[in-house]
Image 1 (spheres, rainbow, N blue to C red):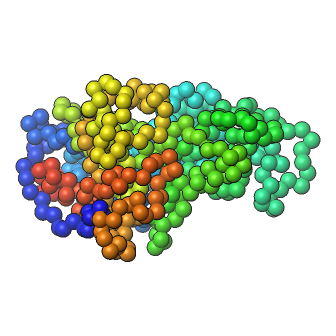
Image 2 (image 1 turned 180 degrees about the vertical axis):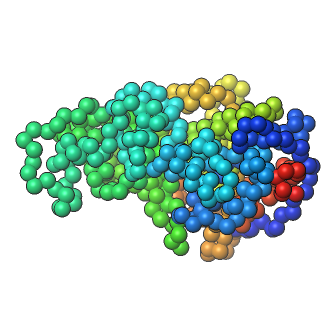
Image 3 (image 1 turned 90 degrees about the vertical axis):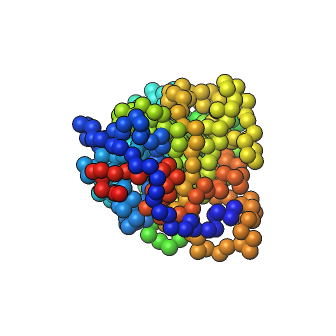
Length: 438
C-alpha cells in the first residue's frame, strides 16, 4: 500500500512521435496504422475535473493535450461518472463548457447508462427514485412505463406521513389505483429521503402494491436495481458529502430491521461494478471505430479520485479481464492476485450484458489516482505505510468484498494534467502536428 501514501514525482514526456491526420467528421482524428495507439482513457468527473461546480484548473490543461487544434480527440476518451440526475447530453454540454473542448453525449457514461441493456424490464411498470428529470431519463433508457415516488404519494397521500406539514388534512374516500409495480430502480439520492425510504419499503413489502398491507413473508422481494453506490463525494466543502450510497445504506438497514432479512439487488450499476466498466469499454471501442482505428484498444487507463469506487472499480475490471483471458470459455472463477473476482450480478445477468456489449478487446485496465478530490495525500498517514486497508473503515458498498489489492492504485499523481502526462509517457505517445502539444 506504499503507493497510496506517496505522490508521483514530476514526469517528463518522452518517446515515439505519433502521426495523426484529420477526419472529415467532427470530433475525430485518425491515426495511421503504423503509429496508431492502442489505449483509451476513462475519466471520472467529480474530484478529477470539477469540485462541485468549480472546475479544477489542471483539467483544461490536460484536455488541450488530448485534442488537436480542431478540437478532435487524438485517442478515445469516455467520461465515467456515478452521477445519474441528468441526461447524457446535459452532462456533455457541461463538460464542453468546463474543459473548453467539444464533448459529445456518446462520450458520457452516466451511472444509469447500463440500464439500456436490461431490456427485460423495459416494458414493465417500474418505480424510479432520484431527483431531476427521472421520468425523462427512464424513457430515454428504454422504459415505457416508469412511475415516480411523487406519483405514488399523489395516488396514496396517506402513505407519506413523516413531514407533518405535508400530511393530508382529509384522507381520500377512494384511492386512485396504480398498476402493479414490477421493479424498483434507484437512480440517485432523492430530495426527501424519508418519503422515498417509506414508499420504496412499502413497494418491496407488498409485492408492488404500496397501498396494501405489508407481507413480511414475501421474500425475495420484487427486483431492485441501483445506480451509483458512492457513499460520499467531493464538492466545494472541505469534507466529503453524503452520496447515494448513504441512502442505500439507510434503505438496507430499514429493510433488515423490519424483516430480519437482507435487501437484495438484481444489479448494481455505477463504479465500481463490472457492468459499468464493460459498458465504458464498449463506448471506447465505438469511439475507436469512428476514428477508423484498425488495431484494437488493449489498455484502458481509468483516472479517478476515490479509492473505493474509481480505483476499486478499475482494478476489479482488470481482474475480470485477466480472468476472462484465462478461463477460455469456462465460467469457473479464477484465482487472481489475492482472491477470486467478486461479481455482484447473477450469471444470467452477466451473460446478458456480455452478449449485448460483445467481447471486450482490452486486456488491461490500469488505475490512476489523483489528489484533487476524495483522496487526500496530506491526511494522517499510518506509522506503517504498508498497513492493510482491511484495518481501515471500508466505504465501499455492502455487496463488495474488501480486498487490499483492489484499492491499491496503479499510479498516484497530483492532478489530471499529471495523469495525462504519465499515460503519454507510459505509452510512449507524444502527439505532434496540429494539436500543438509538442
